[in-house]
Length: 219
Image 1 (cartoon, rainbow, N blue to C red):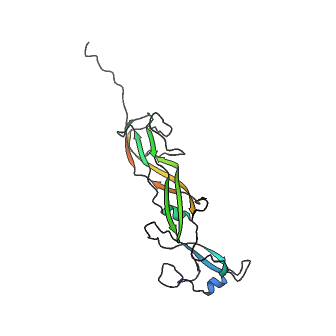
Image 2: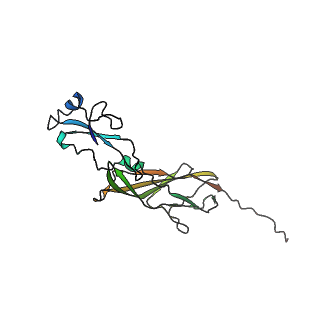
Image 3: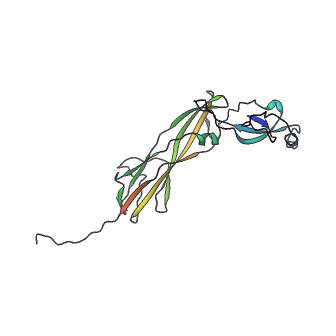
């Protein structure tokens, strides 16, 4: 939705949002057409159940009144993408007991899959396809690492981590999501940016073993 950039022109208020003011008329005097009017751009997302998010201002532009595309603005923004309920990836630790040894690789891998959302943007149906593209592990020992794959169960150790000291370590996984959107059955367009989703943390207990010489009880 585009509204003249004037105080009080708020589509969330129960009042007209089309009034003009001196600021909107004078702001664009340096553009190619000095008679342009400054408009605020607002977006909102309507869910399949009919509920709609509040209108959010997402920019401003100088336009002629005849250039304003009405109330429908079929553009899916990064803010819209980040408001979607993107799923949290599962965190898997091997050994499954959550106990491991110092200097021994511990397998950590994520379980996540692409997600599809059907939303309504300003009365226009939008199909959003989201996919996980990066997985960042924070190991609780001051280090972290980002992978382009989620990893896999043993014997795949491509996303394993090796702790060098004993202790309790809190492991956190952050998944980065990218996506595309299609407006009213049109071509798939890339979402301009990514979203990050943090999974619940898990604790890994790192222990240290020692070799000791003991007498043979048979002697």
